[in-house]
Length: 226
Image 1 (cartoon, rainbow, N blue to C red):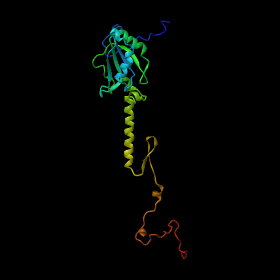
Image 2 (cartoon, rainbow, N blue to C red):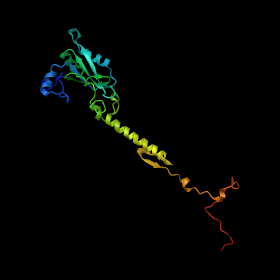
Image 3 (cartoon, helix red, strand yellow):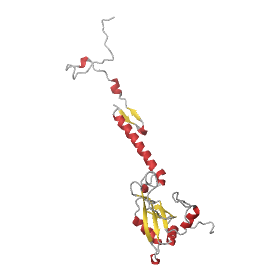
Image 4 (cartoon, rainbow, N blue to C red):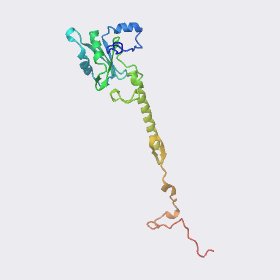
């Protein structure tokens, strides 16, 4: 059974693209690492909430505990973007949290933990083109806990809205034009305006006001004309 069930305290196969170490060296460093990477956090999860949860596996009486928490930040806005680093004083504490906390819920989200090579200055910022994490750059779903739409989807939605607004503004300049469904535009034709008889010189003046007009579609014939 030990060969079938994967231990819960085993690090993943993730390799940091910016870490200039080979796989063997990385495994040696992880074997004594005291740092956890925590992912899939809500943008609204606070450092206090993280401390409360991840301190449950610490042993302060043995000189352990949480050394510090580094919140992941959007590179442009300097606001939380859904990950953090938790540093412990001992490797055993990091393993305990990896075993018991990874896969549990925090702020109604299933969080993921992994052993990390160690925090270095600059790693607190997202690596996505928009400033956040790369995963949120390509995400197509709407996630209210992580800023709504993914960055690319948000740009596409903003572009679509801009095009709709431009079409709407252009339609306001065309008499009788109204916006149709599905982004298409239709022109409303008023049949009464099309069939309306042109104004004749006999209509001028006050003599004919209030009196019914003679029908013009059937002209009267002269009885004496043969």
